[in-house]
Image (cartoon, rainbow, N blue to C red):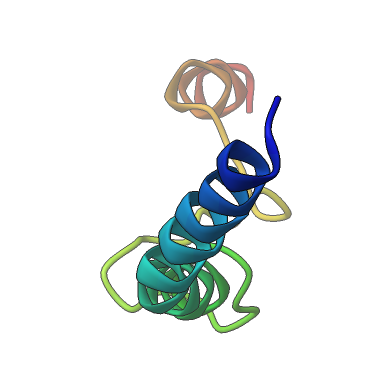
Length: 65
C-alpha cells in the first residue's frame, strides 16, 4: 500500500465514523429508554399469583362441604 492509499483509508474510516455517530447516540437513547428502564409499562396487566384459586378446585371444595 502506498502512503496515499493509507491516508485515503483513514479518511474514509473517519468519515464513516463521524456520519454514524448521531445514529449511535439516537440508538443508545432509544435502547436505554425502552429496554433498560425499570419503570413498569402502564398497558400491561399484572397477574397476582399469590391469590390463585382454580375454578375446578373451588367447585370440588364446595361439593364436599
